[in-house]
Length: 214
Image 1 (spheres, rainbow, N blue to C red):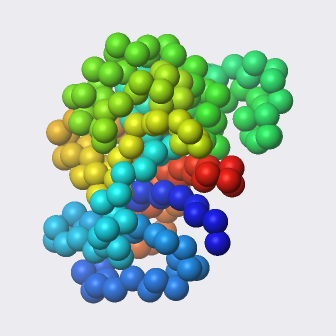
Image 2: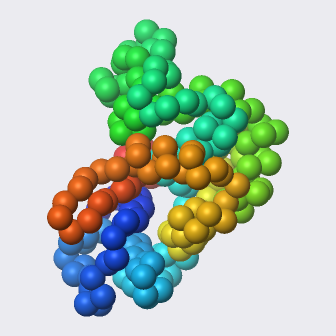
């Protein structure tokens, strides 16, 4: 099986079930997987593979969490449903990217072109300042302002581990990162994946290529 990295970071508004002490590894379908679950009510941490969870990898589109927050803080983004990304007319492999998008829509379909424009608007100096203040992974954006989070063969990107991602999410929820409550609330809104009687699920996916281009 070719190596595939797929990262999904989730947090919950409601307390997790304190009885959840085991994760069925068959859910990962044989993939070499890092999965970290932190119960914010009890402080309990569950990790299916502590070595993999400590391994730093390119964040890919999970970086949109912080790209969004930085854009909001700088006033480059407004509300979640206001017009934002204007399609440039270039047809790309993902049909959902080939149209104008609001912030909510761009986040949901993980529109790379929209976020590359945002990163260029933020610029290297301001992006680097926020990366340092956040303490994001290796803090290396030298690959280029609009690609430094995108894993590709032969490209040295910023890297961060699953453990570090979870730690940052906890700091974000605790109000310990340099973002206003208003902008964190907007982020939470666009990150909402599903609501059930058991709680609200938030998340962001991110996928990249292996050495064979898969």
